[in-house]
Length: 59
Image: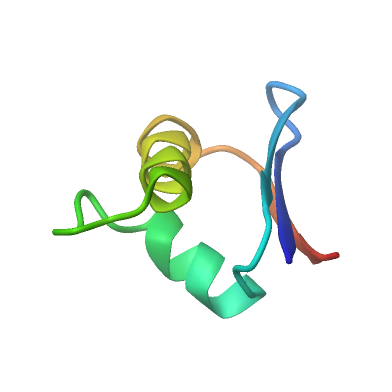
């Protein structure tokens, strides 16, 4: 489980079942064929916040 936190906007995504490395990779991805709802949420969060101050913490 990973917690992805945008410190600039005080927002976060709880990525249950996703480890830190995968969460980071998804944050930098623009799209993924066959993505799950959670993966789509992480990708969308990444598109908006990838240039912000981000922390990815293990849960």
